Length: 503
Ligand code: NDP
Image (cartoon, rainbow, N blue to C red; front, side, top):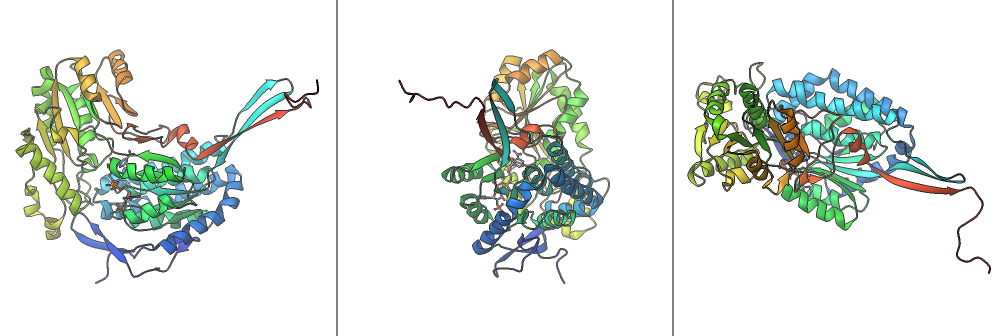
């Protein structure tokens, strides 16, 4: 019997290319641990060909008027919206995320960003500055595309990440070679086909497939001007290091261990909802997860009571069912990693287990689809009475594992929230908005929320502080990451300043 999805090949020159080698791997449905498609690994020669295709397309695409590029990208956004449910189904197969999530978030937030950057460049977002220096001298600056850029994506928001990188890249007049994660590669060809159908010329958006070595080849390639990377801190360090050798521009969107701070006056129901979004959405596989939940000692018992009540509404099960809001983890290797952290929390950190744990979820025994027993399912897990020195509190787990950390004073909680090498996100729940902003002002994180968690609209520039990254994506600042500046001084008085004048 054939696999549910067509095989995937490298995509360049506006079409899927025949396999350039016999090497291939399979992408797996995490809900059932069954193969979805054969993915053909792109050889170095084929990566060179994809880059050459992008180089060939660059002069014409970069000189296409911004308003025309915008028109084409808007068409791609419309195609994405029209095919939302089909694409969401593919993302659900590939990531295991419930259809209720992929059909309302993953494609929508990608299309939003495409529309945002198309509108931005069509309405002067790429304009430079004019500075009148003197009556007869002025400076003007222009924003120029970088050339061929590499995009390298993580597996948690596959099509969204591909769009958050390619939308500003293409809107600014660059061309791109994109490598999706080997764990979730299905979307990339579909996105390339949509771009082509919308009128994006051949070579402007290209896809290569494979694991880290394919990414490493891209990041060191002399013809790549910029690397936009989303992934773990440790991989980001390697990628930024090798890109630095070639003096390439980089954007690094890396991991975190974010603090979700509940203040004593917080609306408890709202705070619990926020903490749950910050830990269980996408089965905890979100970079901005607020896994360190700081709760005042005075509120801890009530917070835990309401949390346990609301945990009943986490519904794992058939990933296509309208009631399901909690899927499996993305892969076996990640499932093993998350479970080992849960075991470590119990056995070594000696944290108090409030709910969940490493055991197989009980609902699996009675599930109508027996294949689900083979999937990478875990229980949403909450530890309480945690301390800052615990491994589960210090390291990014990237799974549905919440740590509740009791605290006494605001000064203490700010200091503890900042006591980490990463600084991706943070948030505060309180009715006292003055205090909220005072705390936000002291938090060492690039993305912060007040009385909410997780929303990341196209208009909002997002990026990490400290080891969580370099640069931002989205918002007006997100466009700046895809252009370089040229300044020109024009002298109209007919005199060149010189020290070499005749005495
Ligand atoms: P990884 O760092 O393992 O991989 C990310 C991408 O890099 C994959 O495509 C991977 O290929 C590729 N890669 C691996 N090694 C190299 C290399 N030496 N050179 C170039 N590319 C390489 O991250 P995950 O996929 O596990 O993603 C999870 C991580 O991503 C978490 O830490 C999460 O916090 C972070 N993340 C950050 C976001 C942000 O905006 N800050 C958003 C989403 C996730 P392959 O996997 O195919 O081997």
